[in-house]
Image (cartoon, rainbow, N blue to C red):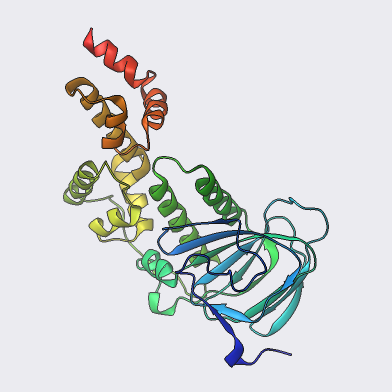
Length: 305
């Protein structure tokens, strides 16, 4: 029997450890500080959740098999019951405001990614009628290669985060939002006409902003706001205007600034790495050698001769 509406548990994914009250054990890996998305990876014993719903959209994903045995179970989605095979790579889509409950009949491994509706509105502002964005519920019985890749990249960022992490996560968020709007949404696309790249004045504004903020994380959504377009169109137009992605451009700017400081200042390489936005000296050294074929110390020695 379906739980009465008054007993439906509400999940606030804007808070960390959002699902702790719902599951037997806390998540083994969680995100922190990622605007408008929230990631949790779980290893749980057999369980059955109460009926619940969230104010954010949720994608649930079965990762590569790390435990033996079947992973099938049941899900009640908006009151309708289905048995799910939960094969490796299967995903479920639970839109915001849709009630669900589920069970796992064995040791469970799964990942969830919650997406704030505001993210779809921001990305979709040039693409769809934002006041009519509605995701279509899907049980965990289908594969989606792009979503699998995004889940894998986000997990890798949590485990081994490196320079440009916020920009990378912003790019992944944008790609995911566009994919959801294209393939899991009831709204029809709105035609847009961006054909000539960014204007010279907008590009100048953006590049000046990047160079003034090299010492900190530069977020894709901030750059798109300067251009007054959605992150999706900003990515495309920036590359059209410069020939490279924002992430590549920022990395090049950081290396150029590092070269200048190595030649003109008395700062240590570690201090220079910090001033131009690298996590530490080793990150600067790796990127510097990859782009220039030499280490910062070798560059510094060569210029001093």
